[in-house]
Length: 502
Ligand code: 6LW
Image (cartoon, rainbow, N blue to C red; front, side, top):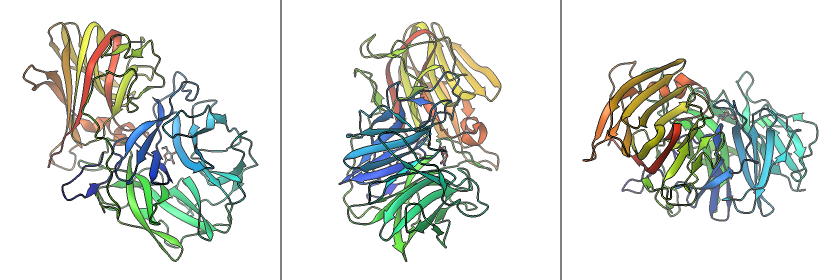
């Protein structure tokens, strides 16, 4: 997934696109990593790697309706926050918060991280978001949450002790969160994020003699932050540590790539980055986090290349495809018309989170998307979605193609043209906006119909800043995909192709 260069260098982010709050564990030579997924179903993507720089999605933890309950009305950036993945006693354990009403913290386990994962153990006694799991030498499981406080947890029953306050990070710093607790050498280390998940984000650490402290802060805190710098990777925080088989250490963390003039807009959400870590005097020292990643001192082992085209020839959908809140088979199926994805509208629109939508994360700053749609029984098309109030779409119906833009409270039809009846190929091109002045946005999105010679006949080009986190708010990033707004529409294939400008 990272861009490969001929000199074998690898680039950050290692998992591009909206993949925030990474949590990692290693079993033998295999690394596994999970991320937050918010209002999307299935939830909590699981990735596998053998070299820490090439990652392949192998599944989703929450891929059954009983595991992921997102009620109607769940807003964007609601739902699933900040999982922790650990391997203990021959099983994988995943703890996560569903902020939807009546849900809270949930614990899952599996023998194979690709799934199936268990039904949830509910954890009403775990008192906050960003739960962590750590087992001590006596086999006691400690669950530590944002704030930072901690309970003893029975992972089989979900029973907990009363919460205890542990450490609240640097005095005066905003939002001590994302705790992860590790036994390393003689100490227990408590890693946290602080400063908020925006430009002030950073990573700090403390250590103590037991899993419950008392904790002494690292004199060099924050051990990682890009706040107040002109670094191209910003908002760096929410980290997790992992030890390689050769004994060296790495950290995964989230960061963003703001582009354009001031204040800088990031459109791909919070992405997963990798950085080396050394230990000096019993404290971790984080290496340079740069777009060019030092090649690790072990062989690179790329996984399978992701194909540009999904033909929808498989019985089910690839794990990268995500929908809003749920994906009932009567509204979304590859079985009705073999080789096609069929979407049936639910009387809802992309202006709410009940829309019938199947998308994938935009993972590259420059990319091209195409889809062959048959709209003869309805209306639908291709959408670029930041949230329910910020999306652009090109929509086909028998005889016409229309581009709509929704930006905050405003919704407009921005272009329309007649189209021949029958299947047609819709396209969206995303390209950086050339620098002009301090107000230039990050990118532009062109919406059009692909002509028989392959060119995109553009109906309109829209500025990308309105589909950025700095405009929309929240925790997610762009997702590009197919939707149905009326009747039934069928998609024969969908192409997503990263394009490089240099
Ligand atoms: C998550 C918190 C954070 O719970 O953002 O960056 C929140 N860190 O730890 C949502 O992803």
